Image (cartoon, each protein chain N blue to C red):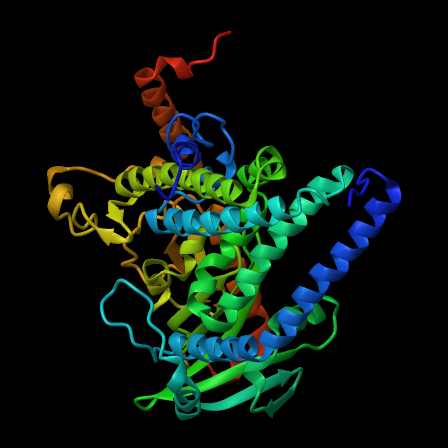
Length: 249
Length: 215
């Protein structure tokens, strides 16, 4: 059967059929897989939070190793003692605070409304960790992460991740050689909540100085690095009223 | 009977050398510059493109007689985009860590001009098997260049291969670094890829002067 594929009506019908077919395939797939995908994302959040407070399977200084997915739920309830939601002056406990979408809360804060800010209190070897989620912008797309602080506002660990930073450059924010530099840095400059800067040429490439609020940037990833610094600053600003109440130094 | 006829073999081998999509046709340069700072990313991208171009070429070839010519580019785009999203979703459900590594490449695969180029130039006019071979061949040709560029950039830029230090420790000054050698930060940034690709083109054309265009 010869069909005249140049006719307008054929083109329109073809386009319509194609949209329906492709749409159905994708919709079917999304529905069929959403359960598993959601579960994977929940595990990932729990792994990230635990990673920031030092609960991970890192062996050498090379690679990032999370706790395995089959035990992450159990470890999460073991180490995370409290999940708080800070809404203005109210502080509530919420078992599912880790599922709160920071992107939405930041958007609320920008509009001048009161955001619901999640904060996790972890305990490991008798030490308390305050773990705060972060969300910001890299060069191409979203970046996010978790920062774990102690009562002195010294960083105990961080985890960063990204949606689409350049492989080999900005994508390296989730590598150990970048993240490990943050440990030991203070977010305070005197009594000011300063955050942590990501800087090039700060004369401290191996990060021996821990009192300068600065870590060494990634070569070739200036904008991603600036994004990380801006994300930390923005988060610290949002949480500083709460942090003020737990700060002991 | 051999599995592949001579003509079929050429479909695979030509794009590896004398008709390479990057060095001869100068297609797909954007992703070649963007992701070759490390070898692992180059390899992942090469595998992803082999899959998408192989399957995509077959799909387009199967539909070649019913695609209306007025909207064929849009149809091609939809086929690539659907394929990539399907792969991404399946990986997210069953191999989450791998999908995290790959997600960065999704956008780059959809916009890779080699894929559109092969759909348009080959799959629309050839049968399933030949289109499949052509897709695999071109993706391999692309992948080979990516891996060569990734090898040199990671070696000279970071002193590592697949993230494993091969030249010693630059901070502790061991291995080659003890002699005063330094990593070349320039290799990490995208313009270095252009230079490496340029050198490959130069070597290739001096070995085979027939490839040099006349002006």
